[in-house]
Amino acid sequence: MGCGSCGTGTPNGCKSNGGCSTGGCNRLNVHDWLRDLPIDDVATQCKVVEVSFKQGSRKEFFKNTTLQHFEKGDYVTVEGVNGFDLGEISLTGELVRIQLKKRGTDEFSPEMKKILRPSNERDLETYHISKSREAAMLARSRAAARDLRLEMKLSEVELQADGKKGTFFYTADDRIDFRELIRTFAGEFKVKVEMRQIGIRQEAAKVGGIGSCGRELCCSTWLHDFKSVNTTAARYQNLSINQTKLSGQCGRLKCCLNFELDTYLDALQAFPDYADTLQTVMGQAFLIKKDIFKNLMWYTLPNNTKHYPLTIDRVVEIKKLNKQGIAVEELQAVEVVVGKPKEVEPSFVDVVGQISLRTLEKNDRRRRDQQRNNNDRRPNFNNRNNDRSNDRSQDRNNNNRSAGPNNRPAMNNGPRPNNNNGPRPNQGGNGPRPNNNGPRPNQGPSRPNPGASNTPSNNESAN
Image (tube, one colour):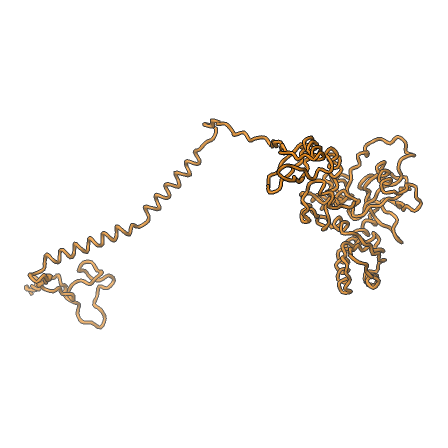
């Protein structure tokens, strides 16, 4: 759920000491608004700091026994189980005392773990090696739980920085006997195994996601304690009891139903009690909803789907009359004025000379010219068929005119053309064939020229 510019160095964050301005670098991120205040007395300064692990998935308090001053976003090496762990400073100063008081933790408790030293390069290298094993361990642990047929769901695995301890977070509806599972984990992963059961809400906080409001889940960003939520909170806020709309990604009622509940309870104190029904001449009127923003109470009559908005004073007056046994003739509903302003129609504005239509006109002219060219190129089959029919009728008329008394076409009695002596088709003139001036092989003398006369020439007669 972090932003894309994280991981620019050590510590992480958008070059702001691990504190991203969007609050997306770490889960349960907080803003230390007392950070820039000057310190009056160093001796009375709070010696406890809040350290977050695995990007805010878990937060604990540690005592700062060193003489070094830590800022938010610094990596520190703290005491662990038979080893050391590595975390990130998330809160310092006077705000830590407020958190300690809120969670009921003593600032001077001797059982509180200590900060060993600022993290060095070797600690960071060991930390990254241990964190790289968590994804494979989670997949293998889920397969092992499935093989043992345990009704549980493993949601997260957190390894200690030195790799000596592993905490497995799981959710289950009933009690689980995972003694065999612990033996499998210890023998395969070579770590000290701790099984920690969490609720469904805590699981959603660790996994993260986007709510119906379009923002990150409250439990993943800033909410660290979960209060019970029931449908009574939805009824006070006049919300429809729809489990699909009222449930979050964890499958339980949304935590945000409690955020505005106190405001609604304070506003509902001005409304009269025991005003669910009113006695009228037309029948008994039933209360539908209460509008705390307009101080109206909506009623409906039997055999009628119309809703009647009544003021609080009118409802109190009707209740007094009903106690005297008097049924009112009418409810005297008020007219509800919609607070939404009417949209003003824009007036006419002369935009001549401001908007140029040359481009649109040019495109229209180009489109018309293209259509005209396409119509000209398209062949007209109707005209062609008409021309052919006219040519046939004209030829038929010419043949009928040249026919004899029996309406037969006249025969051409002239001499038939000599095809042998005439020129061959596809040849022009009576000259010799191209590229073949001599006689053909295996043939007699060349044919006489049909255009020449049979009368001997003067030279032949002289001889």
